[in-house]
Length: 224
Image 1 (tube, helix red, strand yellow):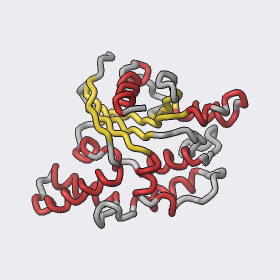
Image 2 (cartoon, helix red, strand yellow):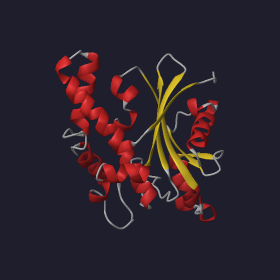
Image 3 (spheres, one colour):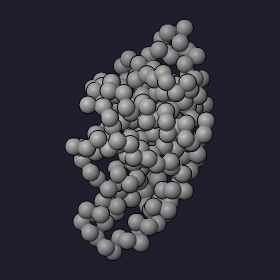
Image 4 (tube, rainbow, N blue to C red):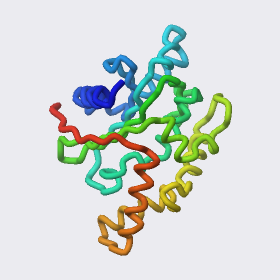
C-alpha cells in the first residue's frame, strides 16, 4: 500500500468512537483489508485458541497503540521512543513468537503479516492525535533487536519480554545515548529550558529519524 493509504486506514480507525471508549485495550491489530481490526489480546486469543482463525496471523497489517496524555515533548515529538516494551512486542509478534495471553498480559502473540507499528497519542483536553508509524523490520534492525531476541520463534513468557525491553532501553542507539538518556535530555531541554542540551537534542533528533524513518501526521478526532 502507498503511504496515503496507510494514513487513510489509520485515520478511519482513530475516528471510530469504539476506539476512544475502549477501556479494556489500548493496542489493536488492523488487518490487511484496512477495515477489520481486533483488540491486541482478542486477536491473540483468536489466533492461538481458535483453529478457524489461525490465518489471521498472516493477515495482520498494522499494530497500533492509542493513549490519551497531557502534553509532553518526548511523547509529542518522538512518540516511537517512549515505549521500548511496545517496540519489542511488535517485533516479536511479527517474528511469530507467542505467549499464553489468557494469563500473561505482558506477552506477545504471532502476527507474521505485520508491516507497521503505530504510536498514537491524543492530547488531554484536545481532539488532536499525534501519530507516527514505522516499518517494523527497519525499526528492529536499527535498534539492534535481532541481537536481543532468541533466534527461533517460540513460546516466550512475560519475564523474557520485559527483560528484552529492559535491555533495549539501555541500547545507545541515539548517537551514543540510550532510550532512557535521550528521553531525559529532550524533556529537560524543552520543559526545564536546559539550553546546554541543544546540541544533544539535535543529535538525538537525527538518530531518531534514521532509526525509525517515521511517517507523521496530526489528526483531529470528530468523535464525541
